Image 1 (tube, rainbow, N blue to C red):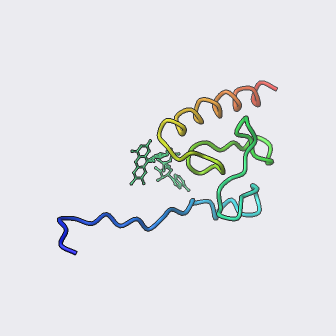
Image 2 (image 1 turned 135 degrees about the vertical axis):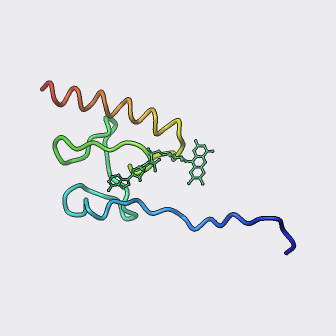
Image 3 (image 1 turned 90 degrees about the horizontal axis):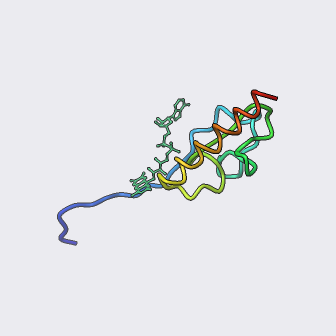
Amino acid sequence: MNVEGVLVRIGVKPNTDFLKGKVPLDNRGYILVDEKLATKAPGVFAAGDVRAGSAMQITTAVGDGTVAALSVEKYLLK
Ligand SMILES: Cc1cc2nc3c(=O)[nH]c(=O)nc-3n(C[C@H](O)[C@H](O)[C@H](O)COP(=O)(O)OP(=O)(O)OC[C@H]3O[C@@H](n4cnc5c(N)ncnc54)[C@H](O)[C@@H]3O)c2cc1C
């Protein structure tokens, strides 16, 4: 093919190996969270592309940051 450029999409892999056995992950390695972005591990929250079910967009990552920060605040005040 005669083209001027190529963008190779090789896929993505979450960098969560260090969490294995500590925080529940799905079968692709994404962090499982509830609607407050809390994991099953007390005090551990996940936001952005790394969490399971993310739409993987900048806007959703930013929104997750807000939700997670509020959840962390509530957790710390408890
Ligand atoms: C090619 C491409 C094009 C895209 N285009 C768009 C677009 O047009 N519009 C859109 O909305 N979204 C787009 N996205 C998606 C968008 O970039 C992501 O949804 C967004 O960046 C997710 O933000 P995040 O903070 O969750 O993760 P990231 O931006 O990936 O940030 C995670 C950070 O954590 C760091 N990190 C990883 N492991 C560790 C560790 N163990 N310790 C410390 N730090 C660590 C990484 O170095 C990185 O800086 C695109 C993504 C790609 C790859």
